[in-house]
Length: 163
Image 1 (cartoon, rainbow, N blue to C red):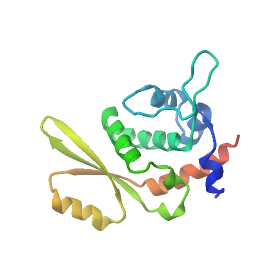
Image 2: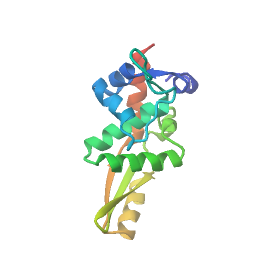
Image 3: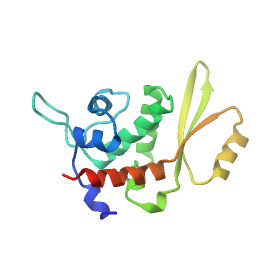
Image 4: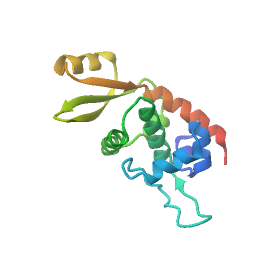
């Protein structure tokens, strides 16, 4: 792995993110355009023809997680709620830049709240933690994403994209 600060301070274009996440460019642009996600290009929004959106590593991590949550079937608003919660908990970059987090899973706990579903994002350090959630709240569903392993894979692809 590269020095943490090297990748963490890097600037990413839409094209580089699309390549690393293996997504079409339009999807990356949509992550920045749809306000429900709350993903704002760190280095500014494109201002006109020929201008570019430029992103930092946290933006890339948020887009990766948003993509995984969409693939798992969560609606856009739910994905945005999860991202908001994780920003309040210190963000996602730490999971890309450290192998000590390789076995961290993200649990999205979904429970009916009247006519709506609530989403709570928690980091699952082990399966016993998940078992405790189900024992405490048997009526919930939990979507588990192995973010530690996925972010390690993402790190490698980001290093390969070059400048």
